[in-house]
Length: 180
Image 1 (tube, one colour):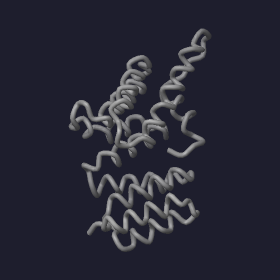
Image 2 (cartoon, helix red, strand yellow):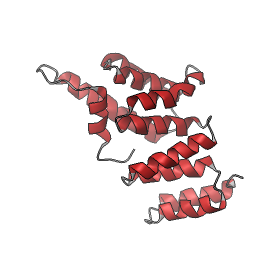
Image 3 (tube, helix red, strand yellow):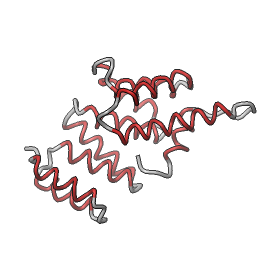
Image 4 (tube, one colour):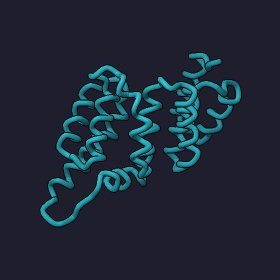
């Protein structure tokens, strides 16, 4: 059974209030609706944001396990894996997103991040920009993708020396100290 929309909206409003007990609020809702993938996804996102990666990974995996077609949860799980240095796991997690329509922002972001994993920075930037232009649904995700573009661009601008950086190093440096 899923959490009803009214309670979910109340939960989201309470979390937006940033009272410090957000995880406890989600945990209470999960007590009533343990099979709601949205609540597991929300819990995983909150845990990632406060630097509890092991618990965050478990919650995101549970969300995808409960709802394999929950595209944003699948994308975020893969993104979390990628920023944790697990590129192969991320690619595996993202595999089913290839079934989304060609112009779907998540599919485009996956294409850009896949180029990034292969250290193909120009097509990575092109795809990430295209994804941002296509995404009107999840604006915070656009900010994350723009941060990656900015980081790639700044590295490319300073690439006159012999400094090289892999895509994984780039992402680990970009997201290690901030919430996903």
